Length: 584
Image 1 (spheres, rainbow, N blue to C red):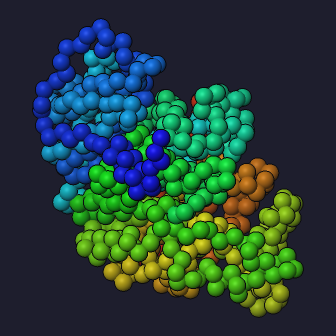
Image 2: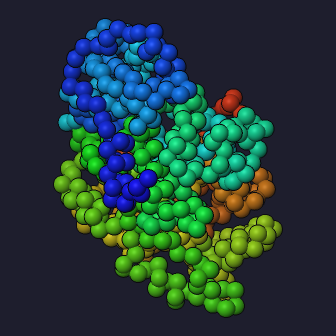
Image 3: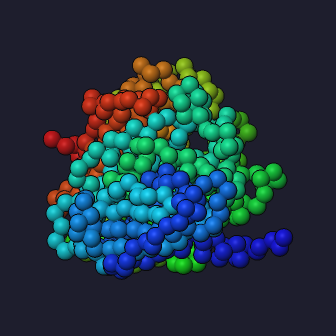
């Protein structure tokens, strides 16, 4: 069989994954069925979804589940109405789906009214009628409020999707913003799978190895979309989503990934393109163009209230992550001069020149009150005392806790009276390094350039982040950290189910609160941390403020849960201040 070139593979994949049915209005219904037709499909086993809403259109999604062995084309119709009973029908149509796109269906419904709730469903002669979904177009003109649930990092074997269940109960959202790691590529025995069998979340035998091929990625999406809570949140709210690394492989960058070994796992680019084909097939995302599934950055306008920019910080331009092991000074420490030269290199990219130019132009033209960046990784300066990183690398939990206690004491004394600490103590708290080189801290120069876009345009900036599995709030400053120009704020969501910092640090549960408080004390721009609970962030924008409410579930290890009201936290920023403030 002829091997496709990368260019040919990209084009073929894009044409398959990006194929959309277009709906412009009422256009008939399905024809009658035959007994043969009715034996070719089981039903709509993966629910319905909507996404990428604009002021006049929205993507609708479903999958027609075939009978085993069926590879033939099947017809599927859709209906869109202004009421849940489908008495006020505004759209209908029919298309076909095949094994070439995994029997998924994506419809771009046009000519809708702005700021309007619609109901939709799919019909098939073979499979009957799908569940009913609800969606909503974006508002236009003068807008007083918009609200979003912000999520990231849903790991099926790591726990139940209780966070999705809770978001499905919300009543006033405009969209769910999914910041990536919609699924994980790992196999049984790898990250996040410990204890999965005991809680009924083990990967099935036919999809329990690390994902490498198109069929394997497809099967993992299919598994996630059989989850009832995942189906419920998709049916309730439109999604605006971007990928992070695990949709392909851990710590992915432009030309590789930490969790990809070419010698045993083949060509990375081919793996990536197959992963992205599955992503576009299974996610209600509008492709950038008919022949492009590598570009996912795009924008959404909420009238005069907010411009939302969804970025790709992961796949199209990111340079390979730095590694402290390459900057050791020979005595177990870090050669800071060499490391700083590398991390501040003006040629290091995370989003790349083309996406940077697109973002700059969009921001310059926007007249909205708020500029919101929906992206994957932390932008705030998470600079830890260097000795904490050394203690962490040692794996000595006691050493970590002892170092934290000592450093917090020094920092508190220094903040009250700098003369009260010795020069050695001052060095201990000021000798800092970024803890996460996969985040913007590993791409210092480009982060500064992005922040300058908003500062020079005099815009009100709110950055949203996921990836770390923990909740954070950071002030964002240009240049000199806490002493520099305040540009905006960052609100980061906890994970849906992936384990957080409490697992990595291996800190006893009764010490977590102490660690969280210590992090806020030691890291200048950090204003809030929850390092141990799963949850989501609700962002509410008005003309006067941007408010973030973090909501946490008490467990993901069982399907029954409660909201941990004692842990919920609310913070805000205002256009006149552009820093984080408490909510009274």
